[in-house]
Image (cartoon, rainbow, N blue to C red; front, side, top):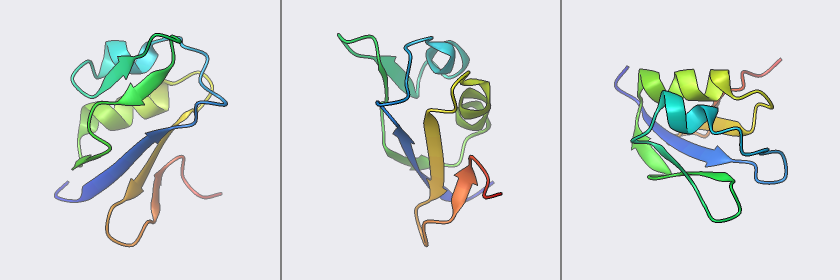
Length: 77
């Protein structure tokens, strides 16, 4: 992939299903409120992180390009 990403979790949407943690355990953690957060908000593009975002049942995981801010996931409609 080669790009750098900014990864975030919308905590107002996150339901703590932990799908992101199961799919990308090195990239996401649950906090004491059982909500997800990225381990590294700025990271190299990574297929596992994209799979985790796609696997979130409420689409709480957001990924954008670090340079320019264009959305990677969820895609613009």
